[in-house]
Length: 506
Image 1: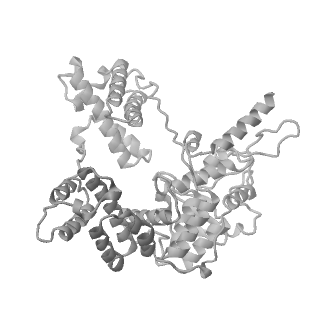
Image 2: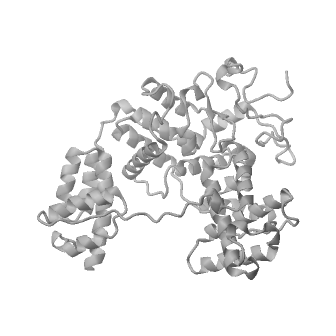
Image 3: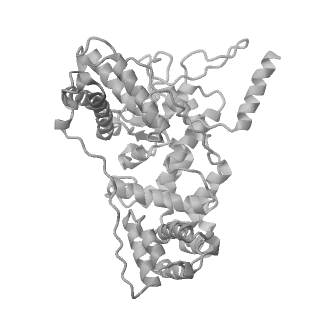
């Protein structure tokens, strides 16, 4: 027997049957013993009597399983005893009736409520609220005082200037016909301003080499395109602002002529852009990082003689505190699904994976049924990077029940959730459902699916005797710095911790 045991423990009667299972070939097992310090998450061994401290890399499978099992303790009502409710009726009673001031618009909603699915009612409600806001601004009147008389031909023309989607175009076209049936309005969707796409001919030859290096590291094409835009932005800036580079095009500048001072000058240029309001601090930091990374690559591959890219980046505060839902709010969310969802098994399993495992959307999208071993209570997760190997995680009993229930009613033999939908359609469908359930549950947390991941990681940090490296590993992060951005502790918790620290020295 090897000195290092994997996450699949040899003596565990529940886990052992899948040790040689075909399903788990090529999987990256998490290592949890003292001899694998390069691979495993750091845990806390039983503390010494005199000096409690983190001593060795020692985390048992049972400890990890216990952490996952006790992370959430929200209550669910018995689905069989819950009355089924209509989302459309809820929207009408709690949103449309009190918020829509224009009677003609409200009559339109009566038709949508009776003829369309709830999500169409919700989408049109969002459009109607924006429409009322624009009418309010145009006629300089508070929204709650609006009447149908405030909707004039000129105000509709004003609103048409903001049509940037098919939904807005459809909504405004219908409303215009209701208000002015004999008048024909030409409503055109405004084209989005697209960033010019760089071709290979536009890129510097060494930037193409950098691209190949990034692809070999598993970097996504979208991220590579962003890097190309930012490096070419720098090279164009050089061409326009320095006489030494005027005779070259940006794509043909000799990189060995570029000095450290040029990069520092670009840093100052980005900071001035921020002061003018052209870029946010984070955007400036990201752009500058792309440039320095490019020149570090050139130095490492002996293309330039000096490491001029070894410059400290533009420092910005990337941590953003956010509130996370309480156990009571989580309970309300899942009970809302049970009451209002047309696919409660599907929706509970989907949002359960986001919450109980802290999955990213791309990870839950990739889940297949053969990634789940119900007997062993283990699920195989594919990370966001294409080069990353799958990582197994324990399935808490509550999530296991959600997935088993959906498995018994599944509509696809391979994919757990996505089915045959395209990624964009699947994302839009689930985001709409999340917004509806969150609205009915009284949630006002900003953002979308990633709230569940923030909640998962924050709850891990609140567990006693769970070392940060365990949290990092269960979050499937490469760096603790990244994990730290997902920790959101209440101010009272921090004050209590500070008082304990002060007590040590008093």
